[in-house]
Amino acid sequence: MIPKQEIVKLEAALKQEKKRLEKEIKGLGSTDMGSDVDSLEEEADETEEIVNQEAVLLSLKERLKDVKLALDKIGANAYGICEECGNVISLDILRVVPESRLCKDCKAKEEKEEE
Image (tube, rainbow, N blue to C red; front, side):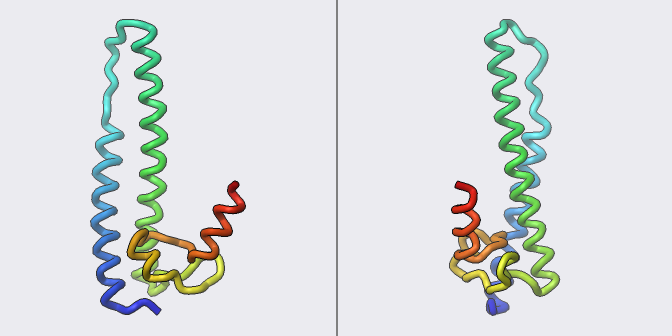
């Protein structure tokens, strides 16, 4: 089981990360490329930039979802439990990635399956 004082620290880190992600998502979502395109090359560059921004935005939203889920789990006293096997996620992992949903073994298994 994870000590209460560690959960308090991790919760604070998660809340800070949530604010940062929300701010970054809001900033990316309001980016305007403009409509004053001068050439096909410039239009292609802007299109590529939009596609790249969309990928970044999707990644940020996914991370925000994981952070919110971790905060919900803290409130439900279910934080730090692997969603796959039910074992406790090591404190070393949670300190690095507080929104972790899998223990070390299950994460390695998942990554191997994705190869």
